Image (cartoon, rainbow, N blue to C red; front, side, top):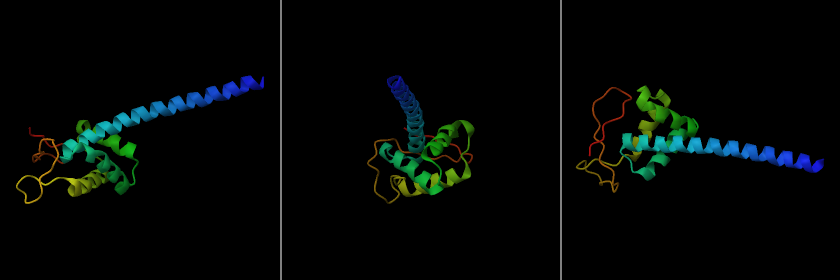
Length: 129
């Protein structure tokens, strides 16, 4: 009987591990999508997208997963919570590569330059190719 109880404990532990892995996969996918939103909106290189999201999380004291969820919903909803928007804009102000001819170093990023349009607050700017 003790052997059966031991197996029950192992099975329960495996079920919990599987549940944790499933949550991690979903969370990772959302964060990856949010990185895409940030690099498109901010004109950042892909390697800077993750760092920008982490910094927004630290500045706003909101979990990375929650920041990512808001960023992914942003294009469909048309706005971000004000705290996240301020945090994102502050981070991007520091990280955004200078535009050509702006007197700064040109970005080594291979992404097309982001040309912001004058649009309603909260909308993602159009990317020019």
